[in-house]
Image (cartoon, rainbow, N blue to C red):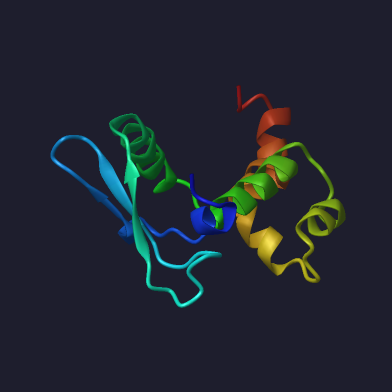
Length: 121
């Protein structure tokens, strides 16, 4: 029954897992604990299972990697760089060009030449 602000404030180190399969979450500060004394919240074994699955998969995805992959997806669809920059709110081409380096190489002049010459399937 955590509040939204309490959930988004949780860090990995705020979780502990018990031998019986349950867990605990350290709520460090809340609407009713402005002094930050903190309290422990119980996590059922089902919740711990979901949390562990999420923690395993979240190591592969960061907030930043979503931004990188979205840039790569747009470039792979041949969306123009200005539109990619607008979507990512970039003022210069530096970052979207870097994020899309592999994609751009695969869509560039040499790649198109190889395809046109039948050297790429």
